[in-house]
Image 1 (cartoon, rainbow, N blue to C red):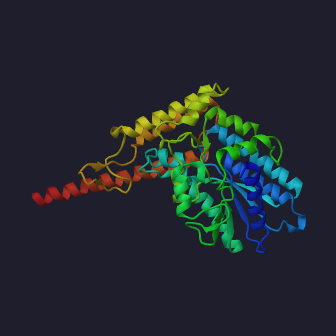
Image 2: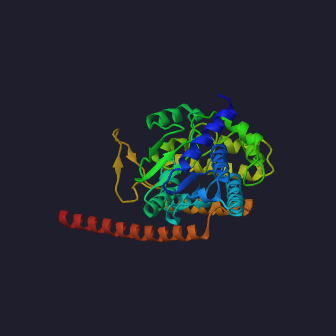
Image 3: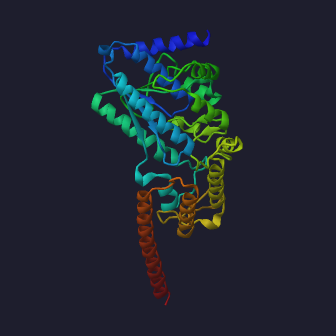
Length: 382
C-alpha cells in the first residue's frame, strides 16, 4: 500500500468515527511536531469536507507547555496554535485550541529551586507527572465530566521505535481500534496514524500545505537542523519513556534525563542564528547535572525530616541545600538577562521564596527540638 492509499485509509477511519451519532468531544494531542501535525491535518480535511450541519462534534486541539520547553519549539507551537484557532474560526470549523501548563506550585523551577528537588534522572523522573500528565489529564477529566465521555486522538505510530511498537501491541492499539485510556475513566484513545511509516509522514508534510494556512517549511527546517523528533504530549505513565529517551527529541531545554541533549546540540551545530543563545542554555543544563552529581550540594535529610538508607546501607540524600538553590536562581536570572529570553516568571519566584521561608521556619523548629532532646538526655544521664 503506497502513501496515498494509507492516507486515504486514515481519512476514512477518522470520517467514520467522527460521523457516529454521539457528540462526545474529540481532543487532539498536539505538540507541533510532525506526527501530531499530520494528525491535525487529516482531521481538519475530514471536517472541512463535511456539510456544516454534520460538523456536530467539538474538536479541542491541546498542546502542553511545561514552561521550560526548548524556546524555538515553544515559539513554533504557539505560532501554529494561533494560526489554527484563527483559521478554524474563519472556516466555521468546530475546532478550538488550548495550551495546558503545570500548576504554578509544580513547575520545574519551583521544584528544583524552591523545594530543592534534584534535576530529574531516569530513576527519579518527577517532572513528567507534574508538568505533563496532570495538566492535560485535568483538562480531559473536565471534558469527561461535562460530556460523559471524550475521545483522545494521538499521533503515535508503531514505526516510531521498538518500545513504541511493544507498548501499542500491549494495549492493542491500531489505526482502527478505540482503546480505554489507562487512567481516565470515560476517555477512549484513538491512533489513526498507527500504521504509517516516517517516510509516509514526511512525504505528506512536504507535498501538502497546511490547511490552516502557510506551509510546513518551518517545521521541516526545525527537524532538519536538530535531527530530532518532538517530545510528545504525555498523557499516561506508559507514555513517559518517550521523554528522555536516547533518540534525539525536542523537549525541555532543562531535561537532565538524557545524557546529552542531542536536538539542542544539533541546532547549535547547524549554525542557527540563535546558536549563541542556545549554547548558553546548553551550558546551564550541563551545570545543573554537575550540581546534581555532587553530594556536597545536598542535605543529609529528606524534605520530611526523615532519613532513609538503601539496601547496601548507603544513605539516600535529601534535596539541594538552600545555599545551592539560591545560587541556581541567581545564575538563572543572569542567564535570562544575557539571553533576553524569559526563563522564570515572577509568580514562580514568589512561590519559591514562600517555600524558602517555610523551610527556614521548619529548620529552626527541628534545631530547637534537637536541642531540647539533647538537654533532656543530658539531664537523664546526670
